[in-house]
Image (cartoon, rainbow, N blue to C red):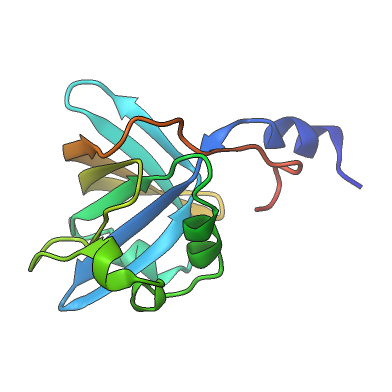
Length: 156
């Protein structure tokens, strides 16, 4: 049974995002929902990553990452990355991913993309909070973002 606290926490709305990054010739992607803008000048955001996830280590040394904002109806990307499947297994990936050497892969059918550089990290309970400067960004199409509301605020 969901407690009042868990139900109340779960009603905090969040977006659905795909984070991509590359390091030493390798690339990875994961689904994120705990992302929030946290500064206007310079533009910055916060990103929470569960402790122990390898991706958290990739984002601690200043490696750039791309934050992809998903649009309503992009259930295929939500499903793919929600299952933890790699970029290389994304159906039609040759047309759907733009790769430039030394840059994080870009999902060309996302709603928007932000290029970010981590600047600080801190432990926040069972997650690591990453603060990142937003270096550049593009709105790829004009649609509504995918919003997620959980029933239980004590787990995904």
